[in-house]
Amino acid sequence: MFKMKDVTGKLPSVRSISRMTLVALTVCMAVALLSTSVNAGTWPYSINGYVYDEDGFIIVGATVSVSVWNNANEKTTLPDQVTDGDGFYECAFDDGSIWDPGKPVEVTVDTGTKQKTVTDTLVAGPDMQIDVHFETAIPQFGTITGFVVAAGLVGIIAIMIPARVRRD
Image (cartoon, rainbow, N blue to C red; front, side, top):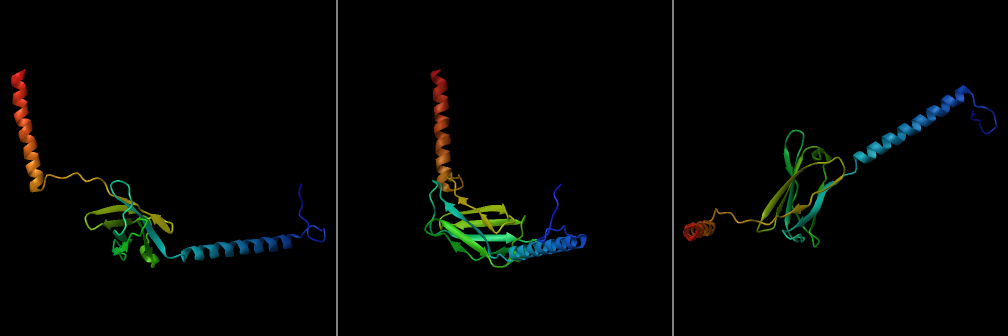
């Protein structure tokens, strides 16, 4: 069995073991409290990411707007940012009270010709990356040009079906 001895070679008394235990617990508590207070003050937190076009290339100069909700369901929109030469944006939170993990965060990107919004949930850490990818747009038939194209296709199909039926 292992026995602890002090520097004189004698076994320590119960009183000195209690004192050592108390000192050790005090040091552990101080370290735990210090690390908690240091973590609580590590602002600013940030939301950052890259913006990509339909082909996966970065978009430079896009305007990025970040909005978050807190426990009272109040929306806070941070100042707009512009993507840099690498297509990167970063929005810093100077006020920790609006960083509320588990609540929605919304990133809106405006390129001048198109806009996209991505919604996610805030994480507990100091940084969150939200990349925005634009998808290939498929024209809708809501314009006059779309209507003319759709009507033309329907007309061609309507002519081809009876002609095919007569040959058979």
